[in-house]
Amino acid sequence: MEIRIKSRIYLILFTVIIFSIIAYLTSLLSFLPESAKGLVYIAIILITGVLIVNLLSDIVELKSNLRNKQASNTVIFVTRLVGYIVVAAVALSSFKIGITSIILGGGFLGVVVGLAAQTSLSNFFSGIVLLFAKPFNIGDRVTLSTWQYGLIAPSYPPKFFSDDFLIPGYTGTVEKMTLAFTTIRLDSNIPIKIPNSIVLQAAIFVNNELYRSVKVRYEVPSSISPDNFMKKAKEELKKITFIKGVPEIFISETNFTNRSNIFSVKALCKSDSSDLPRSEIIKKLIDVNSYFEKKNKK
Image (cartoon, rainbow, N blue to C red; front, side, top):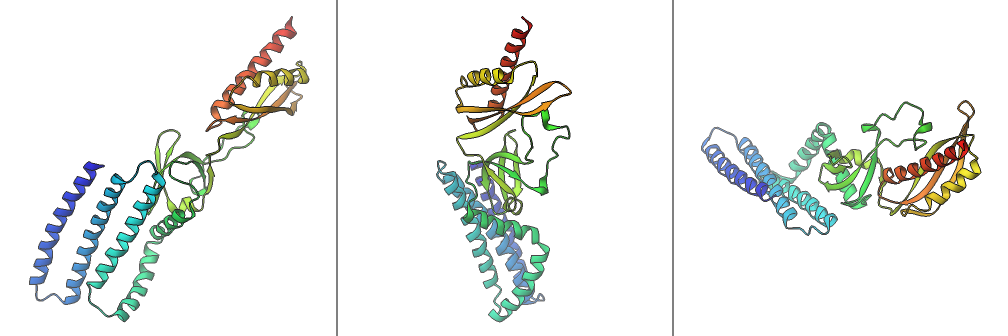
């Protein structure tokens, strides 16, 4: 971060020097109309101002309290928003034209810019809405499900899969939110930057609950008594420390072709994901199944 701040300081100094030379040379060109010179000055103010605002936001990010990431992100967001507005106001005031012309010209220019930069403006205003609505905070573990970035669900039948259905989405921890993008670090440790307009219209699953319901399906031969299997499975599942209360076990389907019963287990587990609890539950069910198969062979 400090290296980035130093590099931006050098860039601003270099830019100021170059623009000062350009402004001086422009003032010497008497054949240029004042409007053309004004446009040059506005461009100089806008570019330099944006660089300074970005530098200030980096300094705020470096000096902000890292223990409260949500407050730090809000301060950085507001710093950039206010900074860009101030830069735009200074640039317009330096043009020295009447207020009526500014309103008329600004309205026409606003329509043109709005059509040309519809996506960028949508991300900008969506970021403001997300800042005040707060559907999630920095550090939250969320799942974003949206048709724009849809995932392809498995095409094989979910009978032998633990879930009856899949929710296509991207799961990770919210790291940062800027004027245009929200950064989420996926469970695979890969950061993904999603435009704010996409985030605003996505279905957001906030995975901050201490306990989550985990469902597992397991196929057992019909030769094993369902009542005996469920009783033994409950006894074994109670030994798992992260399961809260007594898990539910019931027959969800019967396969006459394979002569088997498919049991479903629903358990309230203390975990930030379903993968580890599902694995431990399946291992217990495998042990119970093996126990009765050995017993039947005797």
